[in-house]
Image (cartoon, rainbow, N blue to C red; front, side, top):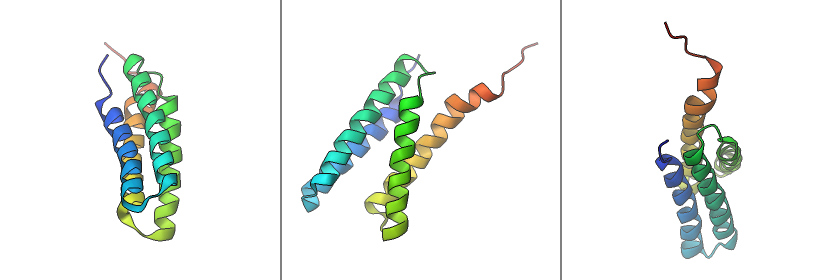
Length: 111
């Protein structure tokens, strides 16, 4: 059982982005969303570390954050921060799907 380093890094990046949004623009919604989403993603990464089949919290939170930031990027056309978080979310979704969901779809036959 390995530590979900990418999951923890993604959670820390989201939380740090919220803190930076508050520091640069004084945006309390950015601070709140960054801390809340980062904390939930951190719990999800911890759950994946403990049990690799327990990926639903990470999957749901990453999907919600990716959808929200993708919508903001589409409407605002600003890469920072919405586009960056959208790209990171898509990468995390890919990792979660390939590593966890995809592995259950095709059982490996031995012999």
